[in-house]
Image (cartoon, rainbow, N blue to C red; front, side, top):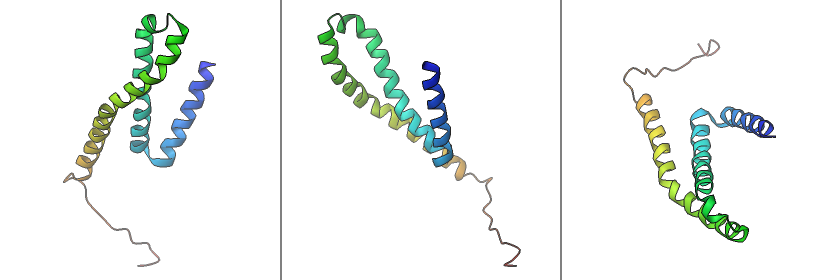
Length: 107
């Protein structure tokens, strides 16, 4: 079942790259993966303490997920701005030459 989920997630990622471009897709994928990974890691590490009682575990999942998501927003914003800076550094390079294309019919 995990392989099916990963296969579908891979197909969706490829479609998203085709649809919006690889930079925007990378930024969106990272903005989903980073908080999700942090939430999963926290719940695995703190699970021994929080989930001894199922009631405590159910009550504590949502607030900790919201707290970790809000806490990871500066990290995600920093990574996205780094990607934008690297992209704009390449675009403003002196090695890039702007040209215009004229079709044979217009010439």
